[in-house]
Image (cartoon, rainbow, N blue to C red; front, side, top):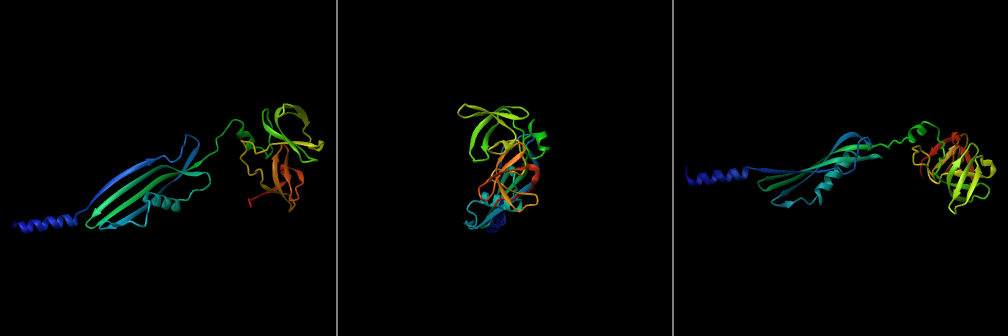
Length: 245
């Protein structure tokens, strides 16, 4: 076989051949522990660039970012969800005159659950009302003037609370709100998982009046109306929790 034929066959072999290289990276993305999440589905995203004679690939400034956006578009996250155990794979393919870089991302979509606690579980099964405990941070509101003072529950009995104020003074307040004072949480208790929120809007049964929540009591919800006046409504009289404006 002549040297010209050997050279020609070698050139054709080089031009018709190709090769590819792979690499991969694993990323946890979020911290997950036993019992605080549920895997809902497996997700993926893909992006690639093509270069001809080394020119091209201008569509994606960051190929990994483009692949992640593709995954987010295919499998959007809902509230309380996150991507976990993310694996990023790269493939570089080389052909005569052409080079292709591809990025493929896979992940597990997980939904996080609220951690259970000994005092949380039974209260979820009750009504929207709350039970104050010793040490709870609260405030006492004068229903006549609207003024309030921060305090801590020292103890309570069937009819009264012992309040310990920031200035170290103590005062026993009756639980009945018609006596002029009501004790409320400034914020919703940590164990509470219901729809009511401070600054949330609610509406009573058989009424078009809207109220804004400003405190959570044991039997009553402390609210204000559009005129700024303070009122008490029982939890069971709430007909609707309105969406945020």
